[in-house]
Structures are given as C-alpha cells and as structure tokens.
Length: 256
Figure 1: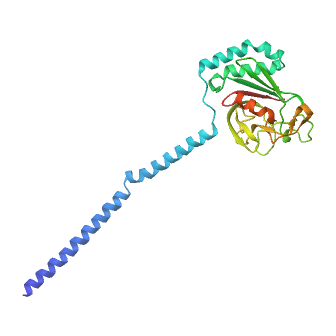
Figure 2: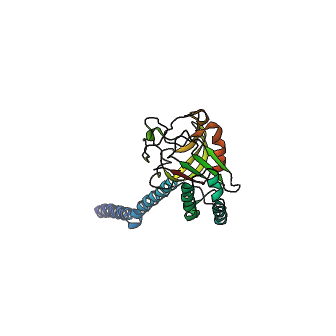
Figure 3: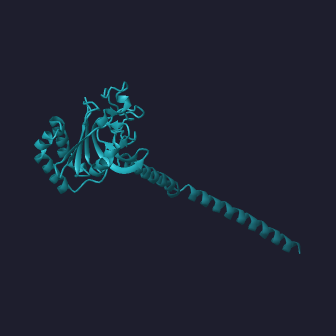
C-alpha cells in the first residue's frame, strides 16, 4: 500500500514538472516569435508606406496643375500666336511683354493645359488704365480689361504698384508667369484659381491669389480699388475671363 502511494506521488510530481517545462518552452517560443525580424519589420514597413503615401499626397496638393493639352494642339496654338503677333500689338498689347510671353509659351509647351487663350497684365501701368489683355488664340481677338492690384503693393492707394510680394499675409500682388486652374464659387462669386510658376509667385495657391470679380473695379467711372493681392476684375467681366482662360492657360503678370 505504501509502495502504491509513493508511486502515485512520484508520478504526480513528474507530471507537474513536465507541465511547467512545457509552459516555459511555449512562453519562450511566443517571445521569440514576437521579436522575430518579420514581426519587427512589418510595423516599419507600414510606417514607411504611410509616410510615402502622405508625401505623395502632399506633392499632389502642392502641384495641382491641370493636365497638359495634347502636344500637337499646343504646337498649333503656338504657331497661331506667332502668326498673329503683329496684329496683337496693333490692338494694344505691349510688344515687349507679348514677346516675353510667347518665348515662355514656346519653351514650356509641355505644361500648357489650355490653348484657348493667353493673358498679359502690365502692372507698370495705373489701375485706372486697361492693363489686362486676353488674346483668343483661335480668332486673334484681343480683349482689354481693368484689373486691380493688392493693397499691400499700393499702401497709399495711388493706383500704382510700388512693390510685389510672394509672402502670405502681405496683401500684395505677385508677378511672373502663372497657369490658370479650376473655376469655383467663393466669397466673391465666380472665381478662378491660379498656380505660380516662378519664385516670385510660387505661393499663389496657398495665398488664395485668384482672379475674381469685384464691385470696386469700375474703371469706366474712374474708380478701381485694391484687392488683397488678387488680380480682381469687374463683376461684368469675370465670366468671360474664366470662360476664356480656365484650366491651364498661360498668364503673365509683368512688373518692375
């Protein structure tokens, strides 16, 4: 009887010891799996992918240029512009500014998104003069308009641009080449966004520099106010400006 009891106790102890050893082995295996290279690499891969996606998204938001027009259509438009160059000057477009615009158009054909028109603004002229010209590439028609400049560029309201800026909050006008972009309805009604193509206007979209209509642009009455940096036109003109130039047309804003 004592022998049986001894054997039973011994077997029970061995079973407990074996169970404890198996548990430690299983725990060690789990720990090893948790620290395996594959397990550690996955979160890193997820982080890298997330960062890449965010970077690409950021680049898309910073570079929202309209898709370029068909290369053959752009070449055709450039040819028409060159052919009509003399007639545009006769219709009031400044020759030097037109030449600079055509040179830029010709060397940047790969980014042109719309071949309906080009625009030129001469900020060396008074805002009380028509200083914004839109050239219809197909018909050769030239439309001249009044356009406002930013109050930060003309603090004394003398109708002349004194300075330019690309800085957020400056309320000043930016100069250089732009590509027009999408139309939208904003605080001023119908408007059109723009993207700057140079260091002098690269913050245009961030600054909300857009072409919009404004009640204070009444050049025919000798009254043109100041914007917050936007090339604002008369309410009666905004629809035809947007219709002619939206989605990737080249615009040159000239200044000293």
